[in-house]
Length: 251
Ligand SMILES: Nc1ncnc2c1ncn2[C@@H]1O[C@H](COP(=O)(O)OP(=O)(O)OP(=O)(O)O)[C@@H](O)[C@H]1O
Ligand SMILES: [Mg+2]
Image 1 (cartoon, rainbow, N blue to C red):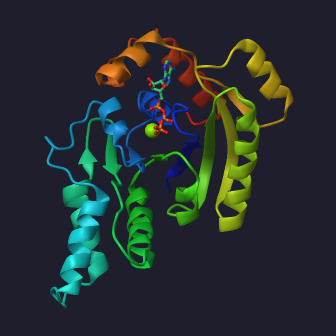
Image 2: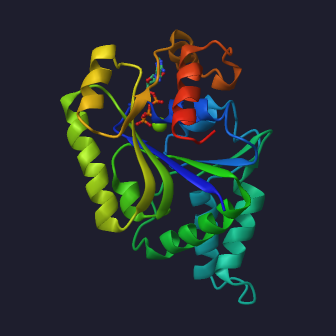
Image 3: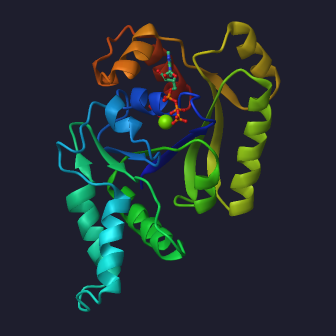
């Protein structure tokens, strides 16, 4: 059974960067799921989905729903059809890890059907991996949609502001409200954290795991769209990410 890691946090906290940095350390086969509509994780991992002729889960979903409306082939259950297309058209299979991107959801009307399909397909898909890492969009709505309800490690990436304390509380509350279970809850300080901030959050009993160090190359490369996979071994962001993963016993 795959270990499921979810990274959440406020906008721009450094969630996608943290996930991309993880890709250097997780054992194969691991699956990365990008729930963020701006598709930034693929860029950070140096994957050009268009060139690879890969589509988002939502794009595949549109086709299946459209076909269903038009009648479709009644002999193929819609779930089977969707699942098959996800494997062939949406899943990017790379060296060391695979990637799947959710995409933007602007389908009108009730979401029940797509959400049900997505939940079912994702839970089947993850079974074949050792680790599944989910990069979440900002905000907590995706937790509400409850695509993955049993999480092993929930990481909340925060900046060192007062607001982060209430954000951590909200994440716990929403998870409880919508019935998301997690084994471990970890707060991760982002690259803006000073040593003082670290001490403050440690004593605030927030399940503080540690911080990701500031890294000039990460900042530059994210701006230029250079893959973080090429970061040198002595990159401060990489070294601190490795420490965090070891502390959380992910590696
Ligand atoms: N360790 C780091 N060192 C330097 N800059 C960093 C580091 N981590 C993240 N950043 C910068 O912070 C900004 C936000 O990072 P990122 O896109 O990973 O955040 P996010 O939480 O995924 O954002 P969003 O909510 O938009 O998805 C980027 O410009 C990125 O380069
Ligand atoms: Mg992001």
